[in-house]
Image 1 (cartoon, rainbow, N blue to C red):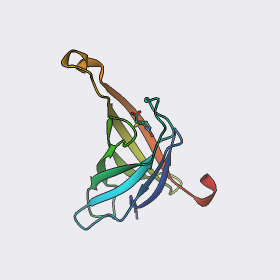
Image 2: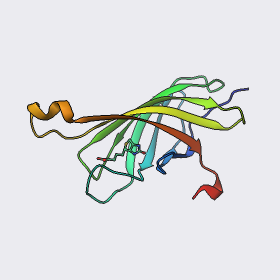
Image 3: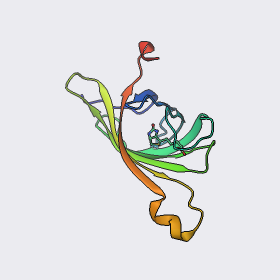
Image 4: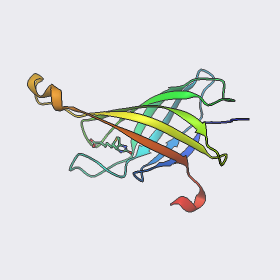
Length: 127
Ligand code: BTN
């Protein structure tokens, strides 16, 4: 079966680490995110995330979550899908938006970055 669960530890192509705690029966979950990179000059700190995944588990669910960066005044949203690849490994294919803080209305146009991230389930050796 194509089982794909979000619960656990993940690492992405940038080297960022993410932990997702228990997914509730309503599909909501929380977790923490340690980004490897930042657009901000401030020291990176682990930040909380909140999201939803579609249920049931026994498929390849879509999901979305928000990261509230607690070391900068920015917010990220990720949306994606959990897949089981051709080797049977779980992989999260996502797109994200990163909203920075615009000083005024006129700067709104340049305040949002967009990109892709792929996440793999972390194994003990992946640190
Ligand atoms: C900031 O720069 O203000 C906060 C950190 C943003 C990190 C971004 S979110 C999208 C991309 N994927 C990551 O794992 N890190 C960057």
